[in-house]
Length: 565
Image (cartoon, rainbow, N blue to C red; front, side, top):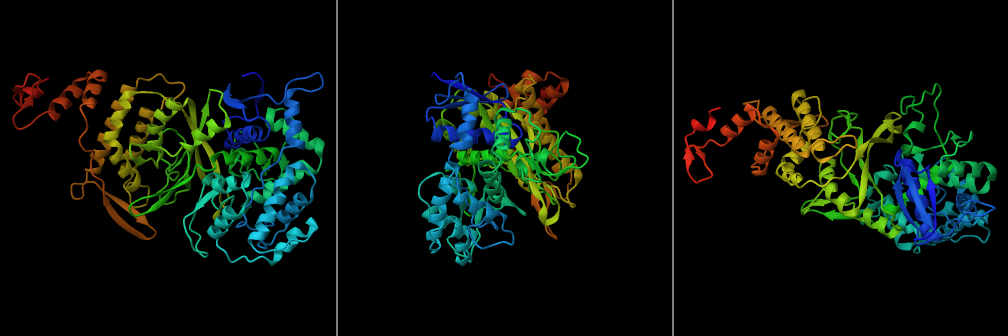
């Protein structure tokens, strides 16, 4: 395919904000400028092949792309009417969101066109007649009813808005599980915060509206410098806007002294406004990929490349950074794929659509299973790596605690037939992860044995970039860790396999069954990788029966003979 390649050096796999920003830029180009555009990851940043802009004597292709984003691109009217202070409903005590929205509604800039369409549709949905002058639209919403639940508002918007990019946003932000006007039974996708486009007192939509107003309607020279810095990683002194929300997407830019690698004697929140705008546009790539999954006794939502956290795969995961811990700060994990083959937007959307992972008929809900399942998915779909992020409530305190997307390593898919052996341990691993959690009543030896087991699981399934370790050795170490965990669980002869489960002030007990039968492939693998006397003795003891050891020729040897070393 002929064309010019845009090298977006500001769109890197880490931090999460830069990854989403790359998806956002490519989505806008593919949907509005060049449907045949293709994107891929190379040399640590996103490349986009397109036919719209080519270098000329007067301007580079990169400069033309920046011109289009600043002057012509139609940005998505992201709406979260259930959030306070956005201007769509008369809720909240602050009016900055309403002021920014009113400015966008009145502007003649092409980038604000969709906001007017969405606002008209929403006003009609809540039975509000808008005046002819757009300057009075936000004020007119003061008469709108506000007693609907968040789930009802989400369903109302999805049903009443005309087809376009805004309904895609609603599909990406979450799924309503209730049909009640008063129920808030909504599953929000954590990539967009804990409350559907925001968290705690930080409203992403209010900040999105403010940042758009800033870059489209105010100082255009400063806006251009910030856009070039965002796209191409060029250095400009005023690229970051102080006292601005970067949310969880840029941990090092939060008001936290130890969140990044830089020394900041007086840290404050800051972000490049273009970064924040484009990363939210990138979240729409997840659109239509979330689904409801109904079980026999429960219903849960599956979001693409999102799962519950596990120990292992990183040395930075603490005791309280997995779900289930008594003082857990975990809100799951994101596994973000990068690919090396030039791909169209529809091909990329298919990758995200398949991000609801299954092994056989069982849906994967934990990163342990993700590590195993994505080995096949990555190889089959040409994915070169998955960048793993833990979503942790580390910033702030009390009711003002917010999430940070903390990088936790790079998972490189590999094809190894031996990994099928892990199916023998899946039920045991799930039982351990569900029940053996960190709490004040749990023996520390059990917790440490679980951590060792899950670390060994990741070592067996993940190929670290700098490692050339044989998969057979990792599988042997995993089986050893499982044996040690079994031993610790059975060390209490009065209550073998019993662990403590604490919910609030109540403590209960649960039995974790030991590892069941495992296939013969494990024995062959151990024979290949471990020739020690201990291994030979263990295999001999494991083969003892009342009538001795079965031989390959159909005969048998005495039980005593089988353990002679």
